[in-house]
Image (cartoon, rainbow, N blue to C red):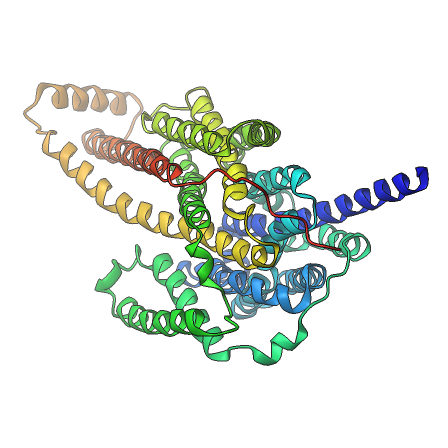
Length: 519
């Protein structure tokens, strides 16, 4: 009896160690996007690339990743969780080394594409493992770990990337993956049990569906990434890509919905909980990646903060997520998960609403509570949403569904950033025009500003004090227009969180969680 208990405890410990290693791999895959984005200018100088060319380092990775993630469900059936994760991690680490050894821009982009595609399976495979490897009543701890990683990694990525490039070189943005990657591979090999794969599925691979899916998702990611800078459909390249994307989408959806062995099983969207959870995940992606995109821009453009100062402010949200993770798991166990989702969305809406009242002087103190509320809200939403969307599905459908769930969150972030960028351009032009219309030189306030500024310039010995004073007026106009624009964008994000609260009503309370798969 005692020996049986010891063996069981030992088995559970080994499984938890193996799962923790999978979380490390998942963390690397998510983090790699943000740490590279924060240091893109240093990489640009290192490989002698233009602004347009260097963007493909990120675009190539994202396109390859968004193609690889939904494919993970099919590959999981063919190889099993353990083997697929190890294959994915080996490819990710190997391509990371190649990225660091790149000799020019073309080689770096090529290796980044491989890195994005090979590493894509680590995120959905880890999510699937939390539901299929652990007993139903005890998988909440694993889901909390996943939720914390999925929300924390994008928040600390810019800070970590800036620190690495400042103290070492851009090559280390990729080399840092080696040690944790090897550790993850080793621990998963040792402690995650083998699953019997259906290798015969590989002979039935729907190549037409694979090619059409790659074209559809790849071009869609490229279009929403390039669209804002190219004025969308005013660009002939965007128009042509959209046509090919639409044709590929039609072919892919037809094959996926009619094939007896679909490459990606889209029928999981018939499950109301999964469909509703995927929609909430998309809005979460918008809020998570959108805020990580907007706030550093505001702090750099308006406040002139350094990367270290920006990192300090961004870390507030990360710390709130770290603290909120265990609380989210405990609340999901104790209360109706739908209630926890609603609380999380309300906190995220409140945090982004407070962010929508910035001034040109807002700093750490003014941004502390908006960051804390948004971070806590996101982690409170992530854990129960994942549980509601995936926790009641049969084990054989979880791997496919987790890939689609991850795609929805990533595409929500990508589409959200494209929308925010387009709105930023429009709002900024509108506010600059509005402010300029009220800056008549005949107004006493304008005359007073110019006279005071001219006097200050003369006292400072500036050669052209009148011209410098006028330049200061133009600068202040652009600065205030930028602040008003950021406020509009944060309020838009707040409204998206508030509106998706209506989707919570559509969720069913889970009666029983998915049982753990036999192993």
